[in-house]
Image (cartoon, rainbow, N blue to C red):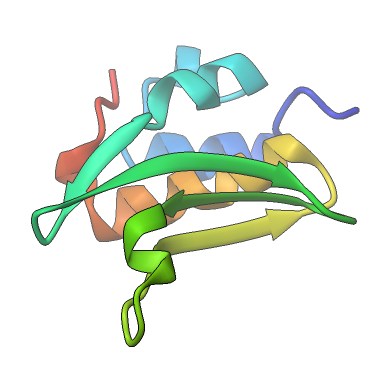
Length: 103
């Protein structure tokens, strides 16, 4: 299992404002991602699952079961867990930078 980001992945996070000391390892990426956040007033929790690939998302179970509602705010997948988390972190930094502590 891969536990470190590639140099180019780390560089991307640094360019997006992540402290270089937290831009390379699996535990650091997890510490940067909010476990829970609000979007349009609704709570979304960090969800990590495995089904042939790793998936990392922000998910609202109540909205998911309601008709015409979107229960997943963001969804990223990869064969390695750290890569799925990295993609989700990049999405968050680009789309909701105010939701994350970068330092």
